[in-house]
Length: 220
Image (tube, rainbow, N blue to C red):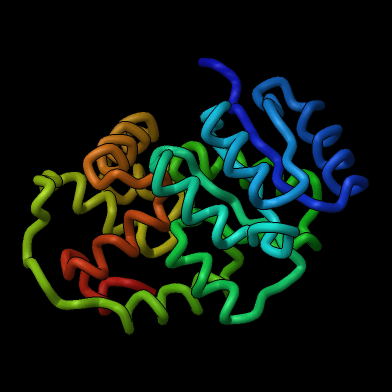
């Protein structure tokens, strides 16, 4: 399996350099580029097509939220992990609508950041519990109650995996609950992402809530 290709978007040089050194100690991670502002993040993402973008919110020229929107519009399979000092509702909700798949505060440890990148890349939920509650509440308020069945033909088994994943369960817990291997769970999540044109579990859940394929009462 190849390395997880990461793009760093952070305007503070010291923070960006420290994050790069931290990630480059890991054998399975490769920092393929660094951006000092939102416009550069967009340009580098389009050029390099990374697996994961680690994105700050507050950046010059173009905000992290706007950069995330443009990156996700062009590269739906690229996952965006927000790494910020802010946990304000307006930022969380804007990030959700922009298509980011994870949201961490800069108070996390280096190990937590590394695990978050790996988790987001493999389809895990990468959200602080308090942030997850806010996001799900927001998603429920946006639910349309529309189509009863997925138009993109998600299989019954894929919907079962997504329902359990929506409750914030790790892949190993999903596997245990549905009596399948972790690798099978990962394969189902990958198929779901491809069919829906998203890059993370969070995006898949929000997409299905808005379509009415998942009911709010099925979530935490």
